[in-house]
Amino acid sequence: MNLSTHQKYALKLGILFVIAFIISAINPVDLHDWMLENLLVVIIIPILIFTSKKFPLSKISYTLIFLFLCLHELGAHYTYSNVPYDQWFESVFGRTFNSLFGWERNHFDRLVHFSYGLLLAYPIREMFHRVANVSGFWGYFLPLDVCMSTSMLFELFEWAAVEIFAGDLGVAYLGTQGDIWDAHKDMGLASVGAVIAMLVTAIINSRLQRDFAKEMSDSFKIKNKEPLGEAEIKRMIQEKKNNSDD
Image 1 (cartoon, rainbow, N blue to C red):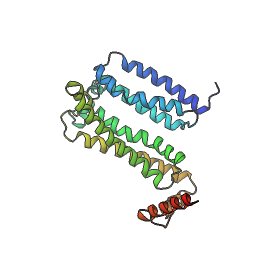
Image 2 (cartoon, one colour):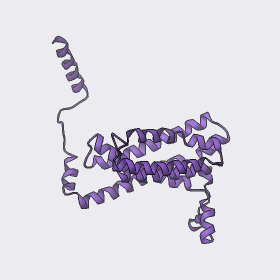
Image 3 (cartoon, rainbow, N blue to C red):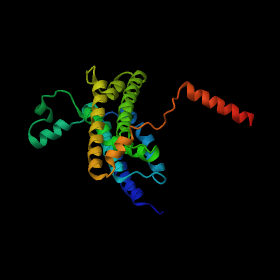
Image 4 (cartoon, rainbow, N blue to C red):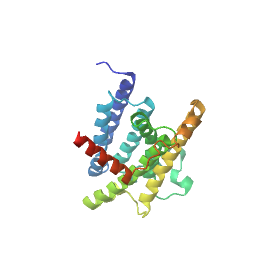
């Protein structure tokens, strides 16, 4: 099988992730929650595999996706509210990580929501750039927009899951830990992460890309001066009528 460099890299990361996935599946804190947490994972991984030949992503994108999925598997294994990062930190430094900031709740879920924007905004940008040929300002704004909107959709998905799987499973999956603003903070952190990722990308591009300023300027220029809405509907109706007459 003749694999490209990017496919080989993706395959290596895929093997590492399968190992992480199997480890995560061994005696998880809550098996039903683990299964629920991995619903989207078993959908995303096949998509990445089947598209790797015709649409291989960059090594940077594959690495960022891999890191995010590994963080997710850690949360799925322990349930997000019970990842023992405080105990791990205390065993090394003699005090808990939360005590450094005066925190009381488990913040691992906050880290993963922040990482969602920070780690996945660039792969989303790459797809926009290569599929939709998006450039300039919109090449940075649209990935941010997608991260924000999908973060909102995930919160709605969590709400629906809790409505369906009531009881301890719903509570474990939602992981609000009594914070009524949990969903808002999660969406906010994902947005902040995406903003940072796109700012870093823009700074790097501004240093390395010769036509960076021109591309940014061109992205704000009007491409079509004709209005859409009712004018476009009228045009399409007329065009359809002319084709029918022919």
